[in-house]
Length: 308
Ligand code: CP
Ligand code: NVA
View 1: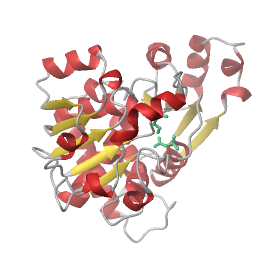
View 2 (view 1 turned 180 degrees about the vertical axis):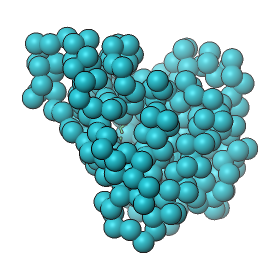
View 3 (view 1 turned 60 degrees about the vertical axis):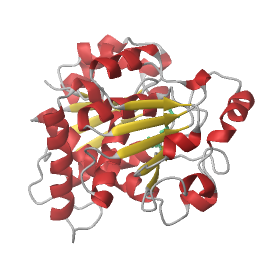
C-alpha cells in the first residue's frame, strides 16, 4: 500500500512517472467538460474521504474534481461534523471505520503526526493535503506547471523568497533533490529552513543556496516563488514577522533581476501587497491560476499512483 505524505518518501522515478501521467491525462481530455470523467474511468466505483482540519479552497475543489474526472466519488468530512474532530473518537478508530467505507483518504491537518498516525491504522492509502511540515500535492502541481511553461525542470534555477521555514519551502527543498533543480532561498536568518530539512538536503546533495540578499536569490532565476508570510496556525507575532519579511517582497523591481523570461508562482491564497505586489501576481509572468488548475491534474496521478 502506498501513501503520499512527503515528496522525500518517493523515488525520483516514481515522482517523474506521476508528472508524466498528469501531462498525458490532461492532454487526452482536452475536449471534455470540466467534470466529465476520463474515457478509461480508472476510479469507477471507488471513493475518497477528505478531512479538512484547516480551511481550504483549492485542495477541496481540486480533489473533488480530480475524483470526478477519474470516474469516482468523494465525501468531504468536516471535523466539526464527525466524532474524531470533536475529540469523541480516537484517530485509530476513525481510521479503522474509514477503511471499511472508502478506497483512499486525504487529510489536511495541523499536525504532521496525525498523518503518520492515521496512515498506521488505515488499510487504504492516505494523501497529505497539507500539514504544518509539508504540502507535497501543491509542489507536484507546481512542477507540472513549470514544465508545461518552460520545459524540463532539471538543472533550472528556482528561487524562493520570504518564509524559508514553512510547509511549502520544505516540500520545495525535497523536490529540488528529487527533480534535480537548483534552489535559491532568500530569507532572513530568523526564517531559515529548519535543521531537519537542511540535513536531508545535505544528505541528498540538493543544490541549495540560502541567502539573506533577495537580489542574490533571484539572480539568473527561471522561476520566482513565494508564499503567505504567515501560514495557517502559524503562532507568531504577525505584525513583527511581516515587518521582518518586507524586504523579501516580490515586486516588479525584484522580478527584473531574474531571467527576462522567468515566471512567477504562488500556491495561493495570496497576501496582496505583502509577499507580492498586484503588478507581479496579475502580470504577464504570473502562472498562478494555471497552478491552481493543475492541482486537479497532478492529484489525479497521485491518486492513481497510490491505488496502483
Ligand atoms: N494552495 C492551497 O493548498 O490552497 P487551499 O488552502 O485553498 O487548499
Ligand atoms: N504555507 C501556507 C500554504 C497555504 C496553501 C499555509 O500553510 O497556510
